[in-house]
Length: 94
Image (tube, rainbow, N blue to C red; front, side, top):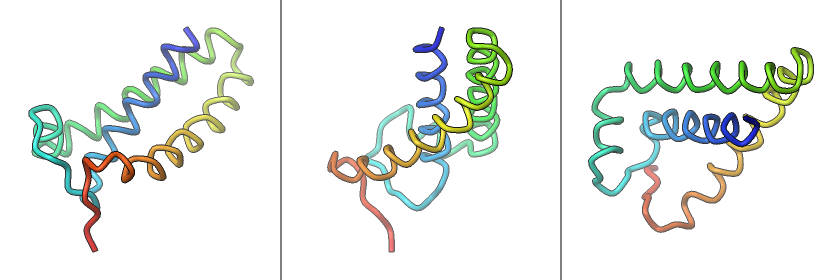
């Protein structure tokens, strides 16, 4: 359950990263769909965050689950933002 919640967090970060508009992705079907439907993508991102938080709370308890979610999500988001440009699949806009 903890791994599933972490994967859900990673997917939610990917949704928000695709919608941000600060990065140009190489055209792929899924990423193109996410960028063309920003409202749906944001709703999906928030749904994934809440689902991950509920899974953490169910597995670890309410306080530990919420605390771990508040620590893990920004940490993962920072790592994704730092290392995604090194994949050479994105191009940052100025």
